[in-house]
Image (cartoon, rainbow, N blue to C red; front, side):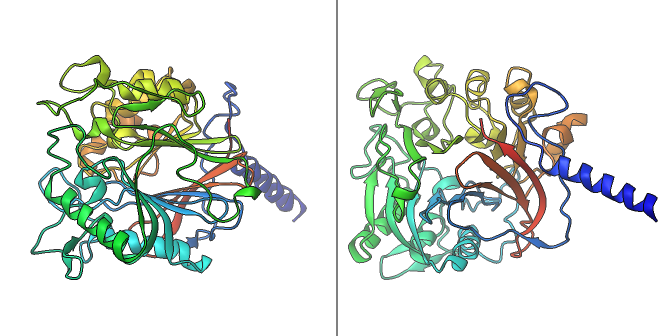
Length: 433
């Protein structure tokens, strides 16, 4: 009996050592940047509700694009993009958890699950990184809802604006939506639909609409108890080719003046990006920001320019779904993330070659952990034997929970197969850099 007890205590001690090992800058293989996955000790474990002082970042899995929901330390909330691309060509993946609702309706249900325990029904900030349907949503007149009062279709961000009272809406084009001149995206039907919806809510619900202002740390702020969290900040880094220099609120324009849309140019290049800082914790997200484009123009590597300014971060959202024309080796070496989150919505996302760059010896000593909201079986085969060492698990809602003070964080992967959102795996805690 005594021998068995000692063995149990030893096993328990080893479990604690595994569960509470942290990342950092150590190169010692016995103290890795990414610790061994601690097991979920209880089946059907629910993620604990947000509490004051914690920062939560939720990468919501929909199968139809990107959506990130955040709760800041004082309860201020924010959504970035509202994935709801609805076409189903052979390279798109199925809706998650199923197609009985619009993807953005599933997003709304997930958000309600997060904020209902807080006694809230509003979102303080909504932000669109750029005008592509896998970020703002599109619609099909035969399939989607319609708001007859405002005369706009419901899907993507329009669903979110209808389902929640949003305080401030940020996008890259307000109020004229004329940059770059001749852009087909600012005049596209889905962008026009969004603009009609936003204007209706501004006129009827008091929602503010603002153009994303690069360089400032005062556009996205804590709304409730800012004085209690002076170590928290959101810095607007980049939008429309303008970037923050790292000095005060100073900005520079990387793209040519009076830029006109031209063949080979893409909406992704105009993506807006931010850095969230809380104590020692830093998180970078920038839509589909590019490191190159088909024009072959040197100014198109806006991603690299921004990475030079941002420097090392703890966690980043992969640019452009971990796919082409993004996540360049230079950018990743500068950002050196401990963890990367990929929002995938095509069968070719993320690409094996791009993910190997994340885990290369030049990037954070090769110990970066990759999380993806979905991985197609066929695409998984392209990773070969390195798959599980690059990302495991391969799919689900990915949640970052930063502890009060911003020195430590955990990463959880939640089931996206139903609306219980049970924890599938927990990683961490990690020490912030």
